[in-house]
Image (cartoon, rainbow, N blue to C red; front, side, top):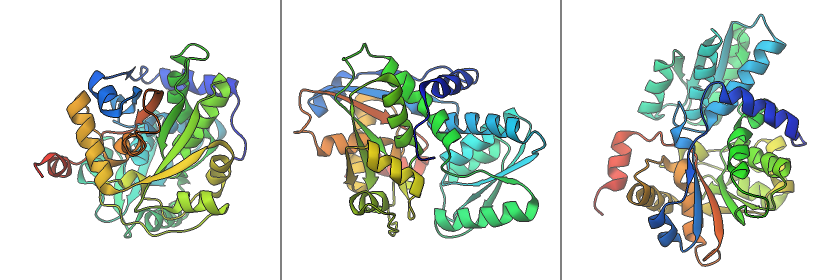
Length: 324
């Protein structure tokens, strides 16, 4: 995938997603507006059936897979959690067996959620990249279909929430900027696709973890650069090796990439809970962390944020909220 999907394909994906779930809430919160000094529209992807935006991509990918390969019986993928839940959710709707590989030390509650959706769970490796390589080898061994972490069907599905987002505004009233976290790239590429389809002039700012800077370094260098991952809170952004196709789109469509550290992410998680009483996982709070970092630049202006997921382990969230 090097070009963005067109409006017709995005609308078809939105229709497919709508068969499985309603639109997620999109609203402003007075306390959050005051904290940020701006008019802040939050897209609540923590309100999907699996608590994160990824479910949309899984629904569209598995539907397309079944049309392309009607004989498929089993799928395999690797994840830190939300992508795996999306594949398990969609596979169950189509009667497919799903096996998900996660790295050791992965989120306990995300693992439990994948199991509850019917997936076989396998732990392997110390990070996502190692889990992904093992999943690919295991898929070949078992004759299962290996679901990638970046694919045009995943992007089309994820773009359904950005189609909802931009469709909320009258022409010319869209936010001046949206902040979008970057894991492997489907979310921010989907944002770019929906922006193009809607005709919005909104700037797109990507957000990476300062402890997983591969996409920021690659964006600046103009080529994929592998970088170590050490984030303790933003597992959904724990990318060590960028996807070349995603990077090409990001470099063409995204205005800027900023980095937020774990302390800034924790502060944003606390802010979202205090101001909206919504739970955000680390990656889910990264967009707000970036806005707070750049508060002076966007003061008094219209801003969009995605609360991209709320699947944080209870023990970890308790530590984030604990008095400091």
